[in-house]
Amino acid sequence: MKLFVEVNSKESLQSLLTSNASILVIGLEGFSGERLYSVSFDELENVIQSIHHHHKQVCLLFPYIVLQTQFQHYTSQLTTLTSMNIDFIACGDVGLGYFLRMNNTNSKLIYMNETMIANPFDAQTFLESGYDLITPAMDITYDKKLSFAQKMPSQTLFQICGTHLISTSKRPLLSAYYDVIKTPNASKHVKLREHNREQSYFGLEDDQGFHVFHEQLLVLDHPTFLACDYGYLSSLFVPVEETLHWINLIKSNEFTIENVMKSSSFSAYSGLEETDKGLEAGT
Image (cartoon, rainbow, N blue to C red):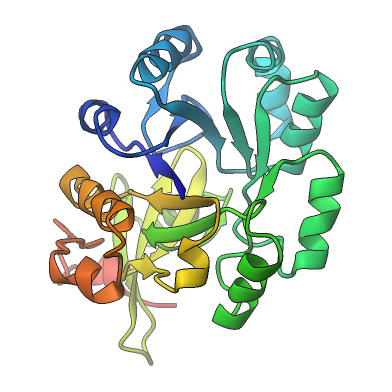
């Protein structure tokens, strides 16, 4: 299995360059928010060369919808991406994927939208339109995920382990809430809990909108998933040492939920004040 591994800081990049990861996933400033380590257009070529120098491939991830205003502002820069030596470009936006295809990108394209593809028939539509890989919707059933792995193991990119993104909205929901309760400049990293449930979630607002994450890691350790050509590790909020441990478990055929959790220090709520009623109030 070739592993796509998210880079979440400049420091973690240095550690991952010498790891057993196959493909390092980075972002572009202005398009990725706090999702992962993002570089400027001016820095991108040097970062690509550094990753290739360490015999690894590069995946440039655009995880969110790209607004028309962004397209208009960055058209020339986005066009230059099509001739750069980027191994994979992953898009959460159909329009961006279409733009890259029409400009004859040299990169393999991944349709990486957490909600759109619910069955292999949907996947086939995107593959026939020019994508090389697809990611199934995050919250489909386990059996449906298995059906993807069984029917298209070479064209499906599963998140094998990592932070579980539940939903994202382009609207700045926290800022709007703080305006209503007249609490300016409050934290944009919050713990959310519905009044009638014990379950808690992590909310984050950045320049790309508002995002909600599950409090627990997602782990897919079934042999059918691990037999696929590609796997993805999401490292947001995760110490790089823990990500490196996941890589080693997969490469040594010891990747199980038990082994992952045995040494896990993951906490989406690290550093949050759980007693702050303004942040924990459910709606």
